[in-house]
Amino acid sequence: MKVTVIGAGNMGSAFVRQLVLAGHQVSVTARDTAKATQVATAHPGATAVAAAGAARGADVVVLATAYADAVAALQTAEVQPAQTVIDITNPLTADYMGLTIGHSTSAAEEIAKAVPNAAVVKGFNTVFAQVLAEGAELGGGQTVNVFLASDHAEAKQAATALAQSMSFTVVDAGGLRNARYLEPVAGLNIYLGYGAGLGTAMAPAWVRKTAAA
Image 1 (cartoon, rainbow, N blue to C red):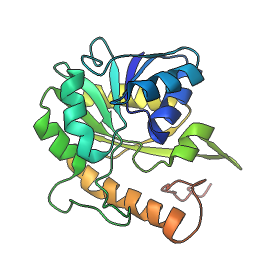
Image 2 (cartoon, helix red, strand yellow):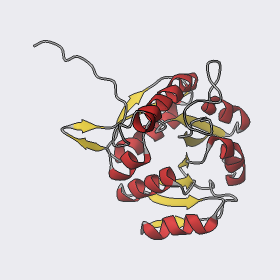
Image 3 (cartoon, rainbow, N blue to C red):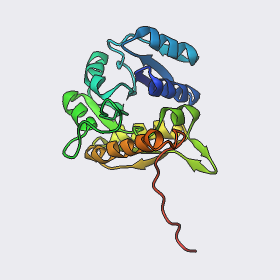
Image 4 (tube, helix red, strand yellow):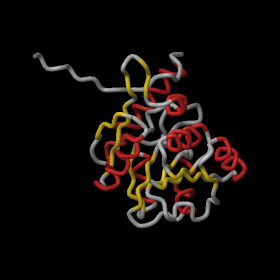
């Protein structure tokens, strides 16, 4: 797939790494063009592109900015009608220990309202950058779960294929309104990782009891 990653921070860089390893055609852009170039240079096969029009021609856009910058970044990138946009943002407070919106809406829903061309898929927001950069396998037979929520079936299918190409286990989390649940899960993950000192080499997962033989 042709994938444009918007954002060259820890998450954006980790995405570029895994997407290149999975064989995708990857472009990366950011407000800081030098940073995007640095990320692309560090991952041979990726290309740094200008922010303006960066979404053109992409099968999937990965939104890896801060939530506050998300809408402007997508507008600058010129998202095309019904283009798949994977929103990995979390609407965090300055200290990362709370959410700025929730209950009756979510970051993903607000982004979808503001950028109606985008077929928004919430996903990867519960995965730490360390885990994403190091890959889906956690050891001991454990594979990182990625929860995907969207109102667009084709976009969710594209996001599922992308996640599976990087060896993640996909959990269908229903419609986009369920981002209202996924974003607080990310908040809990951040608290456990940093506030409780458990570190960032972990990810949330749902386990099911195996049926008796």
